[in-house]
Length: 636
Image (cartoon, rainbow, N blue to C red):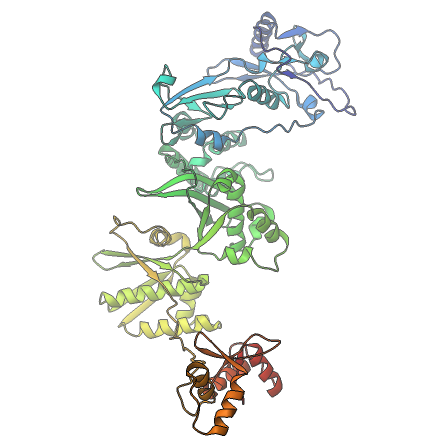
């Protein structure tokens, strides 16, 4: 086999000068493996891939691995040699980008390089370092073998160099797998649809490899930790298609801990069956259009966080990617809102390619935006905020889901969207009140209320006290509405048992579609406890006794009192005032123009400053200065 010209690609070993050469202790092989190794050595000698080594400083053992077809593959254990070589940080292509760039084409041709690594020669000075031992003697590689630390980087560098003009246009390359893509048949002679990087590509969609899915679903019940490792490896390759994969696989992960003995429990069996069911019919993933806005949904459990990236189209939601992460160590002790922020950061790291190219709208019922923009952030929150600042991320609060069911099992589903800022507990109260209003509208007399908010349920049945002012107002309003029913029973249910109500809740934050008639979508524009706003007419100059009336009439209409002395006084005083947008302001030199207020309004302003929500109980002089700095003026 001729191979590549060494001027194009040649693999070199940059062994650390401080590292000592290692000759591994010889390992005995079974007769079957010995026979397979001798056959492999014979084939390699005939192809001139290896040569006999007479004097060696580095020497490694061979490892025989059985392939799926029952034959043996001979590998070399280069553990010690790899440990002495620094890492080649040549960047490998982003698989997600390659997959997205490879569909949407009518014609696809898939190519797999034959003995790709063996096409690249080894540097002459480094060949003896690849020496390995067999029953018939010691040999070294003339070409780049599998198992070397930086072999993948060397191969990808060679492919990028050879196909520099075609990559990204009509060709995509990842290591030894290539795909040729065309929009028209005239550019292709054969129309192929096969596997590329373990995925199935069509003109519009990405599907999981059915062979890998079948292998997972047919995998027998594990009986040791090694089989668990194999199972987890298969799941990792397909995790893009499995929602909350880490959360569902937690019982399997726990079996791999060093301190735990292998014990296959009922929980493990249920987790395995759930994953098999999910991969028996994996979802078809979609590719976003250029500049399209994408939506990210976050999910948090006690020991795992997950995220789902979707598109919103006229046909409905189309998933793009599922990510998941099992929490470890200190992460398990994070507060719930910190876990939500961690889910966002994890998704941004895993889906960086999408976050850089698209606007991402995060939908969650947690106020993570206010958490990530606080001025007094420190530690990990500051680090996460800086990490997310390079992306165009926007936040939308999720709504509430309400389901009303009667004895005849007739359902009314309401998706409640909140268009105002609110806390999580306030949102729970809004959903509670919306449910009461709905029950009252349909004429219900006896109701049973199930809520997943333990705080709301406990406050309504008076097990907890409502110390927060807003929650106290909500609680009073709830009790007032409950009295309109003959009987009412309130019960708390865990969130994991209330998933049915999550469906309309998630729908509240999506686009409203004309074709959706099964769920009522309601938008709440203001809090239920909001009182009518009192509007202050700061320039109430209609009263003849108001001190502003004479000055205002002169500046606005040039009218003066009949008395000459009084008219002269008005003209003199008006020099200190001006009209802006038909409002009277006091002129000043070192402060902004304060608005003029009448006596009643001035009394209200002073009371608000002195004893209102921001009360400071100031003295007279300080109170007057505070009112002036607030932008108001009156001559009393």
